[in-house]
Length: 342
Image (cartoon, rainbow, N blue to C red; front, side):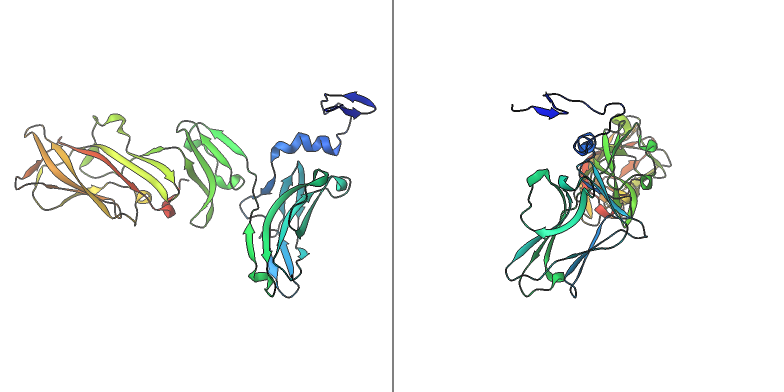
């Protein structure tokens, strides 16, 4: 009947395992471990490295350097290579797509369930075979193997971890490459990533975070700034989308500002600056305790992080102690190369 299986001669529609003192079949083991996913495992040194040899028309697959092994999991089974695997990729007379993959073949479960193979497309899923595709090699007639178009697939598997605060994250280098970490206090996700050539970095990939502005001598965030949020940063494909609004309070000597720009200090931390958008100019309000409210013009330089102000008329603006500069919402995008969290 549909849905039934015969196990040790008995018809059943339900089973459970493992059973004490009874070995698992290959099929049962695959079911138990299938939640591991299908993919390579990168511990920060890389995984399976693919290269081409024109002289022998071969595809080479090597473990990463320094010497070690490359490993992967497919259908609950585990695969390793400790040295070079060479697979023939013959010349063709018509355009042909070759597929490089680790293949799980149930017919080989007793000897070699997983094996690196190079074969012509399409993929044959018959017999419950499973595939971890490394790449597609589209080879044309009269073309060197190294000239063929290569579409890299090679998915990785990696764990996820959960911590309360960012400071609770373990060093990134102790986790497999691609590990996702959820930081509960921020409602943010971080990933062990390669940033500026380093694979030992936690890079934020989702969620907003509050980053303090730089300390500027003579100025402090006003206690009346809502939540003192600083710069709110959200990761996007080009870098961080940065938003800032706040109130800066003067806590040093008095001085006056006229029509010339007066630099208050460096507001934006270096890792949130950009080379793409140089500056923005916008109206703001200067509120003194003694002399009242003055409209001013603000300028923020996104390349160097400076904030400056000037009067917007011929009336001189008194920058008095305990006065407050009210800055409306300003936004920019930081350089992607600056995204280093850990």
